[in-house]
Length: 332
Image (cartoon, rainbow, N blue to C red; front, side, top):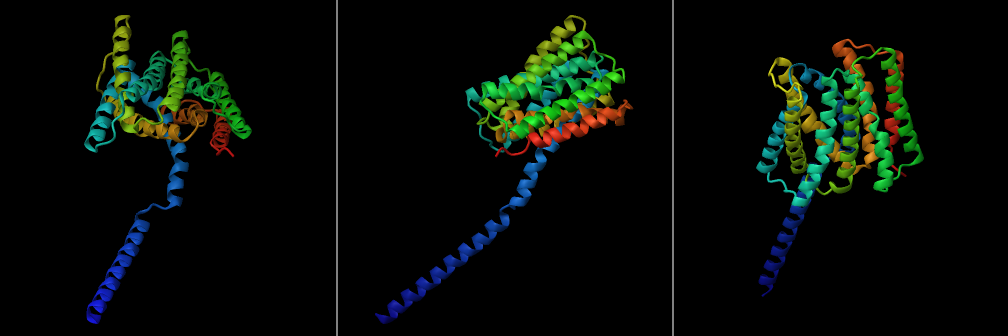
């Protein structure tokens, strides 16, 4: 009897010791596997700046793309390839699929963010508007988005963040003046209208995505945006071609480079970062990043194409940087 009790007691101690060892081991493994908060916060802080740097190159890619190809058919091809890649990745990894309602919302947001916005930008550049000037007009949309988000979404910015919006706008204006002084050409009425429609498109798309797209699975939702945009752009390319517009697709070195860059850097990396940011931040704060695209595109144009960049443009770049930094400050 006593021997049995001692055996059970000894066995219980062994089990308790083993369980404790496993718990400690699992704790160490979990601790080792858990990413540090410092590293995660650094990635979160770097995401906006990485996005705007990648996004600014899109205007340069548009210039290369429209040298040998039609603007709308190029975009449609870009979105078909990007949708196929994202869809294959999402299906292969078993990512959660969106509902029909979420697909509809993604399609509407995509038509604004991609078809109307980028369609307007590419058309304007193909009609002779310099990439830097196109970026300048597009850079005005954060002000519209900030005002609309306050009225429609009830999003409120702190006074210091509104100061950031004002500084960002002032930076854009400074670069605009610099470009006008430099005698920028290609400012035809049609090109300006196309750019303005693009600004309206990205404002509407941003607001729809912010209000209704937060619960949509990111990769599948982006894929749906691209499918809808590609369909509309193919139709628009057909209409543009029928009225005398150039919509051919020649696979020159310039076109292949622009297509590869547009698909992997713009349509996959940059867009996924932007949609992720819209899940975390107010629409006005994310849109403020676009204040930097005119100045960054001007810098890139000066390096790649020898376009003039004056002192006023540099002042505008610094001012826009300060504005974006203030707008991205967490609300208190």
